[in-house]
Every structure is written in C-alpha cells, then in structure tokens.
Image 1 (cartoon, rainbow, N blue to C red):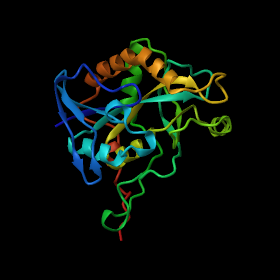
Image 2: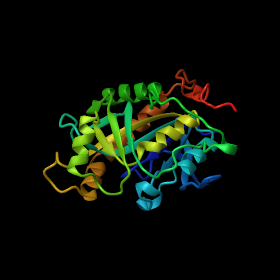
Image 3: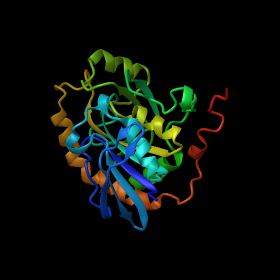
Length: 264
C-alpha cells in the first residue's frame, strides 16, 4: 500500500529519488489518471503523479482532478505533498521563496469540485476551515528551516481559472482580499483530498511577481526558469521530509466526513 504521494506541478515532472520505480495508470469512475510512478523511499511506499500529465500536456482548467485524487486513494495513499508554481502578491515573498499554504481563496469557475453530486453520490458539506494538514505542514516547515531554505510558514493561495495570467486589476483585488500568492491548480485539488480524508499540504514555489506588481511581461518562460533553478531544492525538501512523516496520523484529516454527510 502506498503511504505518501507527491503531486508535481509546473516544472516538477519526475522524482529521481524513488527506488524500484514502476509506472501505472489507474482507471477510476471519473476517467483515467496520468501515469503514476510507484516505488520506495527509505522503506516507505511512495508515489509520484505529474498533475499536468506527461510534458505538461493538460492545461490547468482541464485537469481531471477527481480522477487524479481518486486514483491515489485507490493506491491506499493517506498523505499528499503537492507542489505549485505561484506568483507573489506580496513584495516580501520573493521569486525563489517557498510558501507553505494555510488558506485559499477560490475563483475557479467550471471545475467539478466534489465527489458528492447528489442522488446516488449523496450530499456532503465538508469543513474547510483549515484546508491544509497541520501535521504535514509542520514536517515540511521544520525540514525547510533545517535546510536553511527561504520559507514562509503560511500563506493564502488565490486560485484562478486560467490558463491566462491575471489582469493587474484582478491582482489588486486578490491582494485586498488577503491573498499572498496566486496560481491555477490548488483548488479543487486540496478540497477533493479532504473529501477522501487524505492529508494534504503544498509546497508553493514563487516564480514571479504577479501582474501589476512586476514591471515585466509575464511569461511561462519565466516560470520555467525559476522552477528549473529551484527544482533540486524542491526535491531535496520532499526527499528529506517524507521519512520524517509519522507513521500514524495525529491530525483530524481522517475524520473529515464525520458529521459532513446530509442524511435524508
């Protein structure tokens, strides 16, 4: 049974530290997952899934988040560490910094965001007061500090639909609403993980200053360049954090559905 999964975002398309790797693709009620690499890391069963598929083939608004998360659940995954590339809304959060998210703002428009669509699936109102697993965030924060990486212990992620970058007015709005970073993929991914009672935490890598804050044209080339410059640090943080994750969960992520289901 796979214990820990890593979901790689922009720039994170493989993890070379997985031992005895095997590739698999999982068929779910929601479609087929991208190819997942399963293997071992210091006697822990782990998996790696590229969120955008091979070669970043799938844009953010077309990612089949439900198939991705359901597939990992079928592997037995209880913990997920995800990576995201983000733009900064705060000049104190600079390109190259890591942010361990603790809140999000959702501005997505047309993505299926729940496994519970009513009728046969039932209705669930899951609590998202604290969207990210506190236990995983603590492990990642302690390890990032130990490695002397520039890390922010908390941050609010504003999720936009994409695939375009935001306007300067949108960024101004998000900043006033309390956003710290902006991206296109963390929602509904973290919500679906909660519905499956999977612990979930994100390492966000700041790749640029957002529109209207940056004086330069926003390009994906810039995102790729910063990610490439920091990819080894991302891998090192994840590689060194996974063995530190407690075998037994002490958080409440595995109780997410208690009291959440609407009983007819």
